Amino acid sequence: MNAPKHFQLRPGYGYFSPAGEVSLQEAINLIGRSIACCADQGVRKLLINAAGLSGFEPPTLADRFFLAIEFTEMSRGLVCVALVVRADLIHPEKFGVMVARNRGFVADVFVGEAEAGAWLDALDLS
Image (cartoon, rainbow, N blue to C red):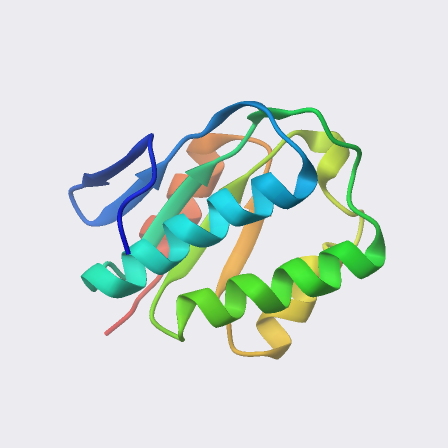
């Protein structure tokens, strides 16, 4: 899969920072493409800073369920993801993260890139 615009390989991880006004489905597609790109290239860790995306309301529980499944499938069990989003998009109980983890996808969601990067750095994938 071709790398999406705003995707970079950094030492030890992939980095994707899309920005702009998009629909929720477009945001999901962008994020999914970056996850698949890492899986294709053998990149095990990915930091996505999607805080610059706007134009959509917070996802419903159903949206969260299905996007977690989609991201899990895109990772193919190969990529761990730290996702940075606006605070209003994070479910109080991190429902989407729970769904993803229940399916074996190592991921978490954060409001700040430093916190996300620290979490990603602490992962032991050996």
